[in-house]
Amino acid sequence: MNISVSQVQGKIPVTVIKPNGQLDGQTYQDLINKGREAYKAGWRDFLIDMSELTYISSAGLVALHSMALLVKGEELPDTEAGLQQHMKLLSPRAEVQSVLDMVGFGSVFQIFTDLDEAVNSF
Image (tube, rainbow, N blue to C red; front, top):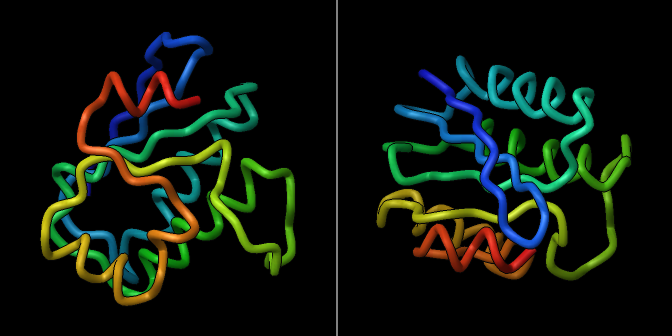
């Protein structure tokens, strides 16, 4: 899996992390590491562009959850309900969206289909 990282300027700078391929038990740590690197560099608002993600496993869901904790500055699992303010998702394919829906991530992450709308939502 390739993962690109870029910044887009909206009302605030937003870090766009774009995984390409399958997010599974062999690649989920790569996504977490990219998030850690960006966080350590001082970036705090993340948009995960899922448009080229063809598959997500339970390990991929762990990666998304771990990154959400990271941007909240937490290390332990968060039991607080509500939408994440510093991490949002962009354009998941239907097969990935169905997994996100199945586990209820729609109530945790705002999901957008338009990049500008997503960036300006921060």
